[in-house]
Length: 114
Image (cartoon, rainbow, N blue to C red; front, side, top):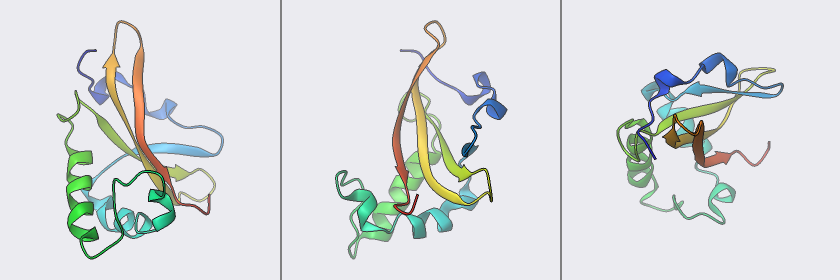
């Protein structure tokens, strides 16, 4: 698969009836840190553990999410509700192929209340 860069995606089209994607920015760090602290999110995926090392693990997770050159040009997004712009999770697009018009979606999580 080729390298993926967000310039090839029409961002306004990443909006549905109930949710939309917004590019992940450094300013999202603290709200995401608090939302991701819910153990239920990581019940089946142990990417983050809620223990004394959480902040260190979270910072590494977040920095990788911001790094557009990792994972073959991945691009990270926050997930927001259309009705009130509430931030409810994160996702990433990576392993993009212009030729095949596909991208892998992963590293997605939502707050349990959704």
